Image (tube, rainbow, N blue to C red; front, side, top):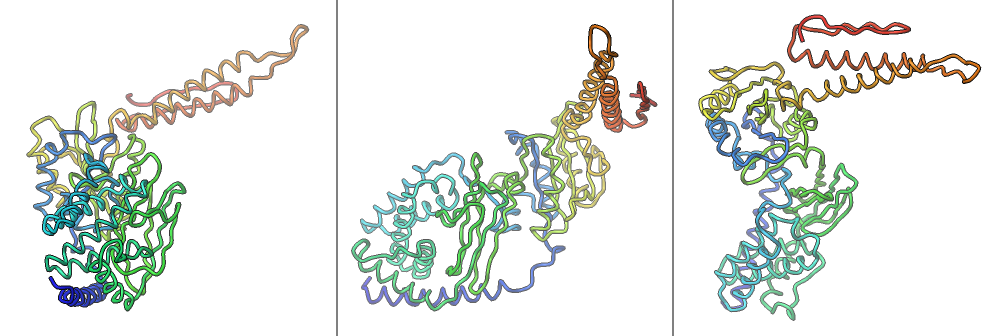
Length: 474
């Protein structure tokens, strides 16, 4: 292609893309879709690692929910919640930094040899992997140089193949990412310099935006388009309109990445709720919560309500794999935007699950409990984790018993002053410690008994002793 003709086509592409950007910005200012018109998002929930057989177990439930209009599969959820949803810093778990840079090198070599179609395919793949896996790349600044080189070669390959709009879009991404690093004729040749200058002139006529990022964690390192911008918070001004890729890295975690669109003349803010976002996993394979312990999973209701509000939804559903009386079960809940359980039910998992799981999907949709679906009050919090759900009462009973023994010892060693030994006035302390122990035991037994119903503790504490009993059946 002759340089003059190439320059003309690139100019047309710049103008066309500028018009498209202006139109998109105007449309973005419209009224949001009413929450009632949006599908209910379905999240999974686990304590510890997601089981390897979860896909097979949950398939009937998730498929039926999709059929009923829920967003239950990853593609539906990601389409529903948009780019701002927090995603792990590595979306391709089997890849490495070397696996990402290898196609970049082969793509650049293909470009230098004039094989532009091959170069474009390889370089697009490299950029996609860079965007999907920032955690593998941000700590090595050499990767920024590689990204710059990839974008230059990709833009020129697209131009050589007659894709002026694609070439301009790639060059805009390069300029937006590397604002202070121009393309020079000496490094990349006259075509690259001409393309860079043509796009830059057009961008100089457009407005600018601002972006602020705040993470609720003082250790959070904030990267924007692969470049470190702050610790805990960051603020950027004079930004070219477009999508910016934010990566938040907290030590010993996978980090979370976000796509944030910045518009001209506007200040865009990204508030990162790290406790919530780090428990939420949005991957290509599955989407849901992962908690370290059953105690942490008690925060699920609050997280569900917060996500419903964040995503502009009236309700959000969670399906949790739990242990009930030592056996696997599934707990399904529908939450409103305050975190209140609208309805909940449990189904046993014993290998012949499909009819019950499809009945559970119907229950989430319309509240009708079919065969094998047991409605549980308030979503059935007592089913979460089996023995884990009884941890608090057990701790209270154990701590109360220890305090009761300690109080008894203190009371027993009390003695008045004598000829051979000083006085030990430990009886009051023994009575006080024993009283606390009795109270802890009483509360623990009440919490334990409340899961079975029909029983209650009887506790009486006096100035020199106490009594504990039980009314009903343990």
